[in-house]
Amino acid sequence: MKVLLGVSGSIAAYRAADLARELMRAGHEVRVCLTDGAAQFVTPLLFETLTGQPVLSGAFEEPIAGRMAHIDWARWADVIVVAPATANTLVRLGLGFAEDMLTTVVLASSAPLVVAPAMNPSMYAADVVAFARERLAARATIVLEPQEGDVVAGEHGPGKLAPIAEIVAAVQSLDVRRNRLAGKHVLITSGPTVESIDDVRFLSNRSSGKMGAALARAALLMGARVTVVAGPQSAVLPLAATVIPVHTALEMLAAAQGATQPDVIIGAAAVADYRPLTRQEGKIRRDVGNISLQLTPNPDVIASLAATFPGAQTVAFAAEPGPDVATARAKMARKGVFAVAVNDISRSDIGFGADDNALQLLFASGGQAESGVRTKLACGIWLLEQLTP
Image (cartoon, rainbow, N blue to C red; front, side, top):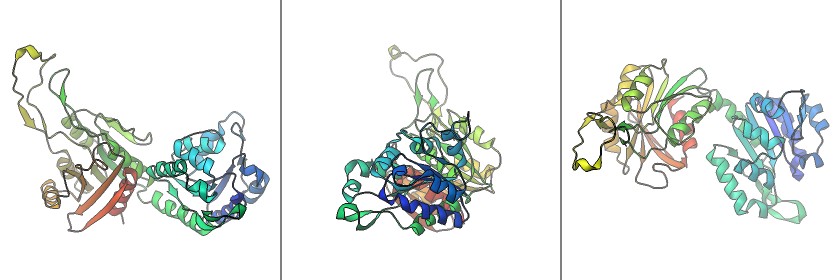
C-alpha cells in the first residue's frame, strides 16, 4: 500500500522516522510530507535517505517540473497518515483549510486518513481542537488518541504520540478494509423521489440523501465499484461513483434495473409510496376552488430489485417512527430481501437531515446487529462490514 506520511511541528516529529521505517517493514511504500514546523525538528534529507523517496515541504514545491505535486501525491496515496499532528494541523485538517503542502494534499485526496495528535494537554482539551476532532470523525478519519504521560515543560496529561505499533496497526486495518469489496459492484438508491402534480408542484419527502451518499463513500473506501441512482438530493455524492440522476419512483426503478449485475444492493432512497394518477399540464390555479388529488401506488423499488437480481445481497431501509422491529421484519419478508436496516426517524439527532444515524440491521436468517449512534459514514462502513465476511 502507498502511504503518505505527514509530519507536523511537534517535538514528537523525531518519532516519525521510526514510524516510516516500521511502515516500510510492514511492506508499504512511504513518502513523507513535512510542514514548515516539522522541518525545524527533522530534515527532508533524513526521510529521503530513509524511504528512498522524494520529500515534499513547501506549498509550491514541484519535484517534477510542470506538474502539480499536491494533486499527484493526493492521487498516489492509498492512505494518508499525519503523525504527529499538532493542534494547528489538527484544526486545519478538521476545518478543511489548505495553507501548506500537507493540508493541501489531504484536501485534494479521497484516500482514508489516520491522524495521531501530539500536543500539550491544555491544547488538546481546547474546544476548537475537540470540534476539529469531531469533524474528522464525521469523515471516518481514524483519530488515535494521544497517551497520558509527561510532556514538554514538565507537564503531565494526554498529549504523547500514540505508540508506533498502534499507528501501523491502524494503517493495516485500512489495508484490509480497502480490499473488503474489491471486485464487487454496489448499487445504491439514494435521496427522495418527486412525483409531479402539475408543472410547478410535486409530492416528495424530507430525505437529504446523506445516508445514501455516506454508503457510496463507504463502499468506495472498501474497494467497490459503486453505482448510485439518486433522486434530487442536497447531499453531495462522491466523484468516483457512477451517479444516475432520476426524479420519480418509476425512473429510479428503471435506472436501477438497467444497471450491470450488482453484488450488493442497498435501498437507502426514500421512495414515494404514491404518485398522482394524472399530472396536470401547466399550473393548477387556486381560483378553481377545492380539488381532489387521486393517487396511485408506486412500485416497490427495492422488492423489484431483489427479484431482478436474485444473486445480490439486497438490503432495504425501513424508516420507522420508533424501534418497530416487528413491522420491519414483516417488510423484510414481504420484500424478499437479505436484510433490512431500521432507522428511527422520530429522533431529531438521527432522523432526516441529521449527520448521525443509528441502525438496527435485521437479517432474513434471523440474526440482528445494532450500530449504535455513529456518523452516517461510520454507519455505512459498519453496515457493509456486516454483509461481507
